[in-house]
Image 1: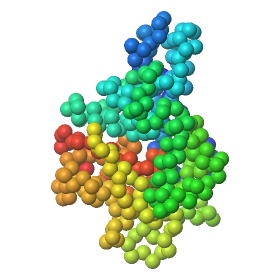
Image 2 (image 1 turned 90 degrees about the vertical axis):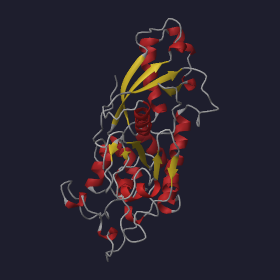
Image 3 (image 1 turned 90 degrees about the horizontal axis):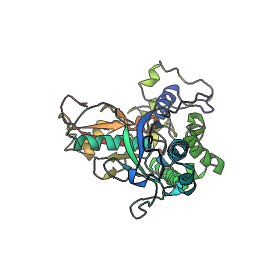
Length: 347
């Protein structure tokens, strides 16, 4: 079984301590996976008692980045030398235990949350017990007509960079911040994901991701226990006379957000951090606007929202979520589940 240990190295960027705390908690999140080779595709002379591999995978990672580790296990333990010579890694692809194709361009955390919610509906269960996501690994014949991307690390990197640029456009109305990065910096974003290195990734990502409070280079960031963890910058409060923070989370044009419904479509719209009446845009207002039947205003909700595997509170501000809990590709992924019991997941 494999686990990914967090790396604690000195940070080279200046960000409020409370923001860095939540970003690190998100980064260090993992999900349990069970990877089993399709029994019909196991080569001859394979050890059929060991074709299953368990691992704790980083939420921010992607399936193609796990293939080398899974391959090492299979080559060392399951396949014989003859099979190892003929099997081609580029032909590998994954399905869920139920036979659904898994999207290579989705982060592992998003796949896990969406699948867990969908499976709970199919099983008519609302259990909150954490169970491994069971994946079936196919060794040949990828269905290229159904897969959005070819099963390769390079294709996944291209999709990842495309998502970062789209998120950049959603926030600022242009992709200048992303395209203004040097190639080495853009590559550093992907290398941070590959190596699961928090500081390497955020050293660059901090240049395109908004902050929750104005950054002052002449003063140290506030400690985690300070009131800044629970308050917005003065420029975000209605009626404030403070100068707006150009790089602040409450100054963006729109927070990059997507709603994922179980077995349903993916919804995307402009999500301003502050509404026209001057009030701060919260998760409750956002969901009531886009899913009023599931989140009726003034009534108990019929659904719940997961962000990075956490039941998000209704008063969470969209701007804060965009700065502190986005996926590595810059998007806030809101997975919506249906309540089976009023006591489970209620806001």
